[in-house]
Length: 490
Image (cartoon, rainbow, N blue to C red; front, side, top):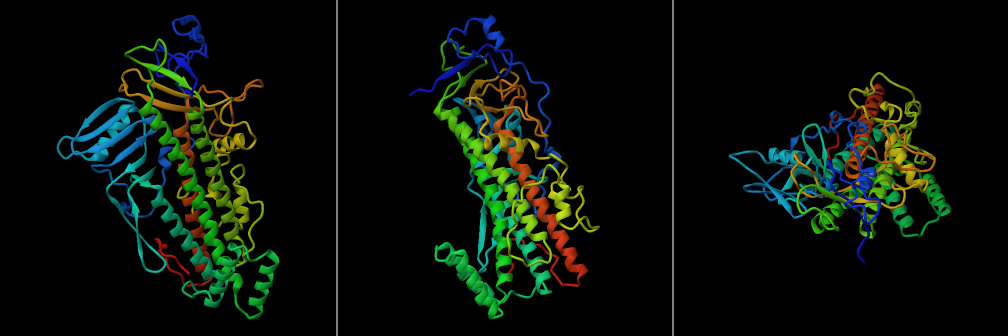
């Protein structure tokens, strides 16, 4: 069954006339003019400026490599393929060639492609290369990370989310190492092997459905009677597992952003902006499309928002767990919700500020350093979904169109979302919950949300590492200064 479509045409702007579903609207400029969307001069400023792109301490070997044969998906359904002669930028059935003259770097060619269609690269869908990053596995093996996947910006250049994931795990393991040092009095002392074996056995039995909470309490009492420090093993395991929860939620958000991007690229490849009655044969045009196929794009955005904010809740739960003193109590924290409204509560929970803490200038996205409502827009978007307002008033609309010059006339597919200011203030009316005057692109907004969550995670882990290392130094406990770098400390 063909999806129903609304039509916009003959506009002086990127987004032509909206017909409001009236079949006779085309050719009736007076009526069409009532629904014409004006040019947006003052979009919301970004809550997460480019100057605060993700910063990781790993070397340039971690950066994504732009090379011949790579294929990319950009915002609004554009595709880019790098080849020996340069690159092919496509949108719908239209293409534009970008030549490679001399030894021009592919990085510069990608930058030119992004400028031509005013769309950023989001995903590398194919690369014959492998990243130079290698991750050491617990038993001595090495894992080489892929050069493809969702790309996130850093100060030095783009990296894949897999690289950031490994970096996050390295920092979590370093935090676990420092906490173990605080408990045992030396960072290089191992946890009692009997406790590690017992904890692993109990976890296996729990996952197999063979232990109830009462059974677990009995087993714990049994090991404690034998003077086996089962609590230390459970605590160390919980630190790692709770850190993994954060990474898993971030990966889940990235997965849905990639799916959203892929669906828009498929629509842009298979459909035509001129496929409606009275569409101009040449020049700019745009149509509105809604139906089951387009609903799925909204589903991906919705799931991405939920996963992104879940990562922040998981992160604060992790934060609350590891700053609790004395270290070593495996009891999980209760009702730990991300405190972006009043970040000072996080600092109070950590025992107040200390001179050795990383300041906002160094780690601006660390939870204790956040300004109030830094994540207000993401929180409001999540609340809209949680309280059943959703991201759209009735159902999502996807715009498929061809822009006016000076932009390259490549077809695009775009999904816009409701107006929410960076501080979380929504634009609404008593009779209508959603407004769209600020032309918020779902992919760009989702990318900002995800990037900010990665920033918050990595800065918070750095803040915790500095805090715990200072604690060890103050207590005269010898610890290593080098981060984990993928090594899984026990």
